[in-house]
Length: 425
Image 1 (cartoon, helix red, strand yellow):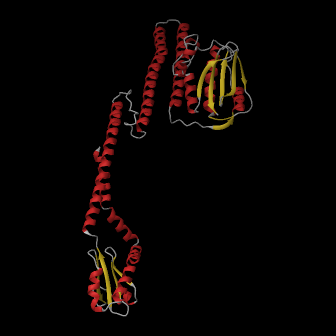
Image 2: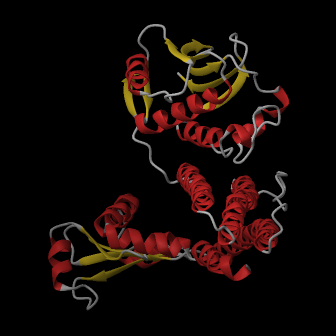
Image 3: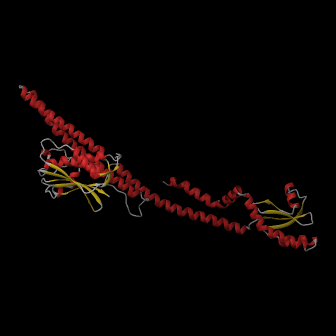
């Protein structure tokens, strides 16, 4: 883990150690004329003072005056235009009375005296050793302090990442109950909470798939066993009528298997997270009226299916998915209603509600939430003998989750159950 951050430490140390040189080099590369102008601005006053003092004194006194005006880190001396250090272009500049900056980095400048061939030279300007040593110590000290602080931060971060890595490794080894600590001293930004959310979701999916697999095997076993029994029974029959009865029973079981597989595929389709619904803003009142007009009750049904809607309400929904959800709810209500099924559109508490109600026996409150899970049925008059595989409400639940809505099971004033689809308005 330390190797991951080592380039960062090295980069920080080198940058702080050489930041002054880096800044100077960058400025000189990008804008050399700006630094030259800065040097001229700093030393133009000095050249004027030196020239003034020397012009007020005889030439024989110049050497002593120049020594007096010089210091350990700033040298001032005189030369002439024939000095080999003065290039031809600079000589023309000096003859015009201008200042020539020979070395920007060391602030070495030349200035010709008026009415004379003598040239004043100021520089190079050096920083005293004590100042250079102090600057170096401060730079090194700052770099070391920053490196130490960075190392302390990195080691603390490394411990947090290692703990999260251990949790992820344990989770990968099938310990699905393990979770990352959400204590502030153990969190790596928002990774801990994100990992826990992911782990919760994965554990839930694995548990759901295990239950689904067990339930599917159980549901498939019953019709398959009946088919196997009928085949063995048919093999011993001598009468044609008995054989036809066995074949009819096998055909019925085959249709049951086909219906079960169709329901399973529908449930699996809506359970996938990547499914995309075609949401369209529509008048839900008008759509419900059209849906009810197209819906066909079973031929042997004596139930009155009616719709109760207020005014026009707009809602964004997938028409095909919602049609499947309502078909499941109405088919479920048909099994238990005595005379009436009511399709009701309502609004309450900032929510839009579509309810399918019946006047049957109702659903016990303790069993309502479990009915939204696959292959779950009530145990009071709502069992396999009355039809269904226990997938209808689970499919409705998945459809409403894709619509960012919910399914609520309550009692109806008709006397039976009311299964409501809720959307936040």
